[in-house]
Picture 1 (cartoon, helix red, strand yellow):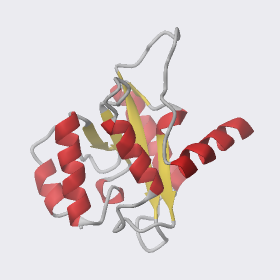
Picture 2: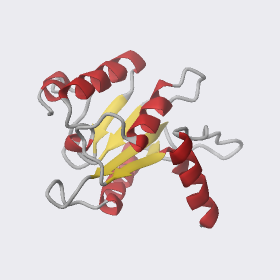
Picture 3: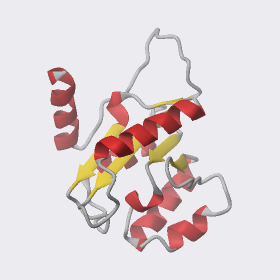
Picture 4: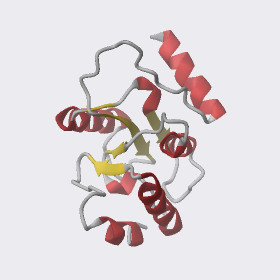
Length: 157
């Protein structure tokens, strides 16, 4: 367990997650996903990072997508109004990868954890469109594959 924590700290500090390569492991999933979690304070959404992760992983299992430890990113005690959140930037970089190891799913607990900055919400929407990534909120039913996303990205702040 200590090795996983050390790896996470290294990725977080370097702002770069290692590429997940499944190797010879039989694939029982349809796609890989990145999970992004954020907890700013008790006055916002009260779900802890653990609760958010559980929601995201349960949703991923139902959808048949796999979230490897390499692609679980989080920010704690950081406002969603800031775009320069370490975990968020790493999650976006995984989606943006052009080396064949980018992921087609971006899972969040609910849309409000993605960003509270209108410009960053629009940038994330553009990223989702440009990469074809499927952004899904595990708890609130947000789904970028439905007609609702443009409205949410415009009015999320």
